[in-house]
Length: 289
Length: 266
Image (cartoon, rainbow over all chains, first blue to last red; front, side):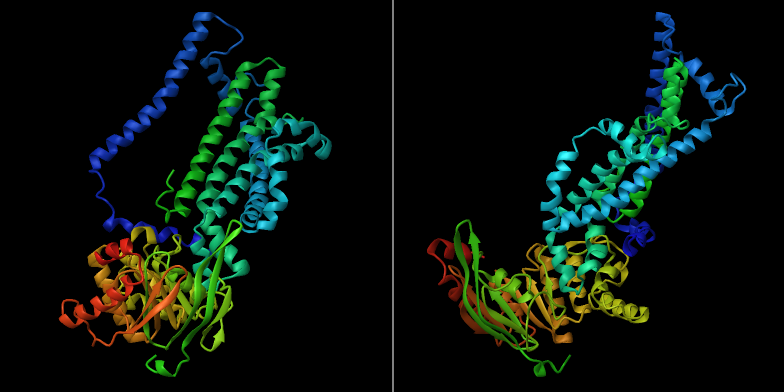
């Protein structure tokens, strides 16, 4: 990508001397523990609530947390039900990951350069802006029939749907990022002898990077959301297809298991994106998620 | 560059500027002519709206004059160029680059060997006294340090003319005083030409060989005053005060009575 950007991280660690005094070690630890306890405590409370709600009403339509835990174990390691879903978790995760990131990276590869150019070139903005704003409000699910006609039954349709969902946040945030760069930075760069494509690489892209990362993070969330829709297109594997199968088979424990795995995957990968962005954007005082 | 006298002067010839405002037009600059000798320290002074920043931006090549031309190093300018380096009031440093990378940004565009880049970085970090802060980001610097980086950035790019648009206007009084002295040292050591925009009479008299007083409505150069006080100048000396009073009087004589009072209290 950009030499300046990838060169950043090492240097920033040394900013300590003039930084405000860190809170004493003991206080910092207690703060961290409290934060973890509160963050993890609330879901535990929800699970308890779920457990008692199922027990009190005696419903058979909703699985109890225990049933879901057993299903999760079987889904991960097998040995309980020994059916088509036993010990298949890694296959499904892997297939979903290829589609989520296939669509996500495709959206980034097209969305970022296009956004940089639309943000910078007025004629391109005039040409494309109305079209983008008409296409954008169309729900991704509405594209389902057409995408199946375009790409047939299979993973490509899923990738296309994820791409559609991830594309607009990346594109719009990139355009916004370029539009909000201080115009003096362009003046400063041009007086120092920078122009043309060097300007895009050395100024426009890094200056818009905080905004681009915001777009990537939003788009990444959408990509995981859309995987269920994407895998409705008749693919046999993937977390979305597991949920669809669970629905068809009336196995709600399987449905909830699939939901939890998607949630966990989305959470973990989002933390990774935040870590990367904090590292790459360590120069920016405003950007720490 | 001690042989500053041999270099051709910067020539502003018949420059005017009109801005469209709705269906109307405002005349920001009436005809401006000036010749700034190589190595000269010239201050442009005037009230807000007199067109001094507009003139500076035209010399930088960021804006085009409506008529007239600017010659730098004997050639008509057509846009921003590395011979003229602008130092902005709000610094305009690249926030994602370290101090070092900001300073070598210009030279690096020509892709010289790495050893040369390192030499330039070392030389100009030393010139502005920021060796210890080479790996900091602009957001980790004080205003005075940022402005030092901005000065080093254009000098490292071999600019022969330094264009400064109220560069110390956002700094506190102590820092401003220190930077004024550092600027004078850098100026005498490198022999660059400086065009310095300010609205402070004291700053202009302290720094300049020559003060161009601009008046508004439309902007033009009303007075061209040579300051031949010996350097280093002592702001508390009677001679300095006499010159300052003279410049202030000429400045306020171009202003409306209300503005004159306001300006005199500075």
